[in-house]
Each structure stands twice: as C-alpha cells, then as structure tokens.
Image (cartoon, rainbow, N blue to C red):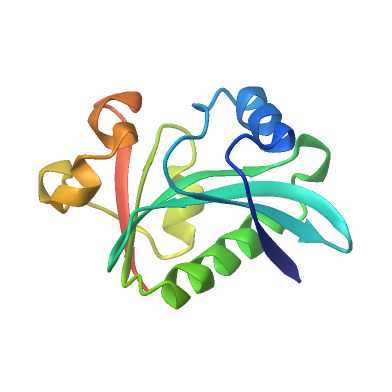
Length: 138
C-alpha cells in the first residue's frame, strides 16, 4: 500500500526527484511524498481547487521503478483528489501517455480544458504544445 504525505514544495527530495526526471520545479499546488513499506518511493502533486484538478509530476524514484509503485501512487492521488472535491483530473505529459491511458485517462483537445486548468503555468507555458493532454473523471 502506498501512503501519501503532504510536503512543502521546497522539499529537497521532491526537488531532486523532479530534476532527475527533467521535470519543472514545484510551484503552486499540493505536493506529496509517497511512502511504501516505510520508505519514500516517489512524489506527486495536485494543483487547483474545486472539481477540476491538475495532476503534477508523478515521479517514482529511480531505484524503485518497475515494481508497480507508479500505479499505486496514481490510485492514491486519485483518492486524495476525490477527497478534496475533485471530479476530474487533468494532466499534460510528453513521456507517459501510455501509462496514464492504461489507467483510464483519455486524450482530450487542449482547447476544451476548463479555464482554471488553462491558466496554470504548466498548461500555459511549461509544457510544449506537443504534450498530450489527458483527463479522467473520478
């Protein structure tokens, strides 16, 4: 079982994990460490308020990959998103589209994203136009 713990955006482990994967530094939103069997195995973030939330930077630490932990982390953050009142998750990815589609995320047209999602820094400029935009109803 993966347990998420709310952490500060300036957490050194989070920043190092994001840098190792070439992902942008954390900014707005909530970030979580993912613990499994008493050890941090990765990090994930949620940005936004209300029914539409942006899934940010799901990262499994390099020495913990290929063990199914990413899937467990995703399930855990989806539960947290629902507990926060989220009804739909949105994400942008340049590398992990197959992973997310296996977990029920569907490709969508970026122009259909809610205004609050389109205004996020990640959506508006950090991720290239070629990034896949995916959504999932919770």
